Amino acid sequence: MASSNKDVKDPIRVVITGAAGQIAYSLVYQICSGEVFGKDQSIILHLLDITPMMGVLQGLIMEVEDISLPIVKNVIPTDNEETAFKDVDVALFVGAMPRKEGMERKDLLSANVKIFKSQGIALDKFAKKSVKVLVVGNPANTNCYILAHYAPSIPRENFTCLTRLDHNRAKGQIASRLKISPDLVKNVIIWGNHSSTQFPDVRFSTVVVNGKETSVYEAIQNDNWLKNEFVSIVQKRGAAVIAARKLSSAMSAAKAICDHMRDWWQGTKDNEWVSMGVISDGSYGIEKGLVFSYPIHIKNGKLSIVQDLKLDDWSREMIDKTQKELIEEKNDALTATSSQ
Ligand SMILES: NC(=O)C1=CN([C@@H]2O[C@H](COP(=O)(O)OP(=O)(O)OC[C@H]3O[C@@H](n4cnc5c(N)ncnc54)[C@H](O)[C@@H]3O)[C@@H](O)[C@H]2O)C=CC1
Ligand SMILES: O=C(O)CCC(=O)C(=O)O
Image (cartoon, rainbow, N blue to C red):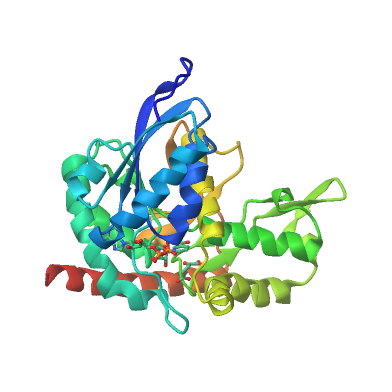
């Protein structure tokens, strides 16, 4: 798998946990094809899963070999946390139990946060201090909180969780209502938890319709739909996919992971933002330290929470509700991990 191209940059190490699972199956190709870190950025891929999945992982490695991707220098399958996190530059935490029909994501909390305690301790010990972390496994915000809590030597700004799938869903809903392409929808926001309390907010979003940029509220002309049905569809989309597929979203989750990491690596455009769960610095009155999804602008690899967006009574109430759930999850998670 060694690359022969002299123009490629020295390899970065990228770990994917839950590498034998369904999201990873879509994700690995996109990471190895150069869509995220660049076609000239070579990669050493670390793939972590549990011991019984090592056979499945071998099959994935055969497939990676068979697609013959030039930027892939090496693939390291492992069930060992030291090998998985050793010197990594990027850590994609996908491995966790997914929910089944009828469950809320927080029902996974006690099983999954224990994984994140153990992996946080290992990340702290073995990864580069500059490692960029994305937590996907649910409940994503609270797993990220626990990971960061147990990895105190890694800067707080390096920890994120995935709400980009919700962000993309919100864009998709607006685009399909207006019968336009989703890339003509800009600056939606997912506030808070990756759960059914999240607040998908399009009060500052714009669309281009018939060549003219206008606000989403102007274009849709139906405030009732935007404040009720739209919010509910996005909040419950994960559950709707589970009900239909009997499995949780995987292809769209993998794409959202790639969008999140590519924007972190390459930046957002001026005056544009994306949604990411980050460790709160207190912005918008959110408890400091909670992993909360905000509008995020990115320049030179640095994430900044977009400031001074006006909150009316409705949006304040929506944000407070999702914050309340995150505080409860955090307390439950700390109890679950401290008794281990
Ligand atoms: N934040 C988001 O937007 C989304 C989050 N998810 C979450 O992502 C997670 C993974 O989803 P899928 O890939 O569909 O699940 P999956 O069940 O297909 O794969 C999970 C993999 O994680 C592995 N795993 C379990 N414990 C592990 C450990 N301690 N270390 C390493 N690997 C371990 C399993 O063996 C399995 O191969 C789930 O928690 C799911 O709810 C899924 C979609 C979107
Ligand atoms: O909904 C779930 O629990 C799993 C998948 C997910 O997080 C999502 O589709 O948003």
